[in-house]
Image (cartoon, rainbow, N blue to C red; front, top):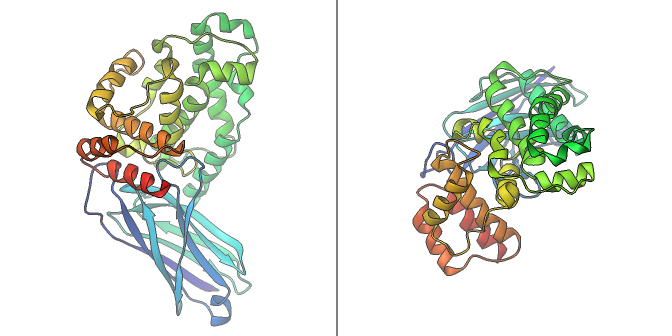
Length: 346
């Protein structure tokens, strides 16, 4: 039986915060196998950028040198969930979700049989979770994306005459059913419990709770009135601390919740435009107060960044005033991420 070992060396980014720091995870994959097999092997590492709007993984194909495959995987968080994929003859033979950490090396070991298939795999790294746990995480995340939206709406459409009745249904019936369906195949691993449960809650809120009027029309066929901001109190149950909110499966990206809060919550939040960042954040903080008891500076930074990103994604480049505001307002890499996205538009 042939053995392969995946070892990631880490490049620590110069700019550091609790959550966001642009950098690269240096990847070295060493595979013990005959040249005849190695010639057929390709290895890639991938991540989904924080503000991605298409859930499109940025994949980096690693370069082979002898029995080693090396390259750099771009990351925009200190600890970011990504994926490693191994292929033979262009066909995926295996892979795993992993945590790319800028602080701590990560290692995946796999056994490859002579016919070019993986028989066993072992993971160790920043997450302190084994390969079986990561397989469960991947399954739960995929199932969470595929839940039938009909679970979001009450059978009795008359409840939409009272937003409190709808919110009670969402909290006591829809959310537990959504969680049950997402975890029907796999239980949430103990070592992933806090951040994975939080990710599921944030995605549920982004699809069901926040777009109240749109969801009522799309899923229930009801023309509902916009409820008051206090009706969005489910948002208060989400943990917005960087170490929990930012560690999410690749395709349950925080972008969904951030973008939908701006677009829908309380009828929507005014785009940031040329308004100074702190001034805009102060107004948003006041608007969200009835729904979220503690609006952290980190959350406000992400929301203001998301407002800029929505403008860029709509095809409108940042103005000179906006670029100046961004440069002055952010002390971490959030500003760099926005400016880089704007540069890519040109």
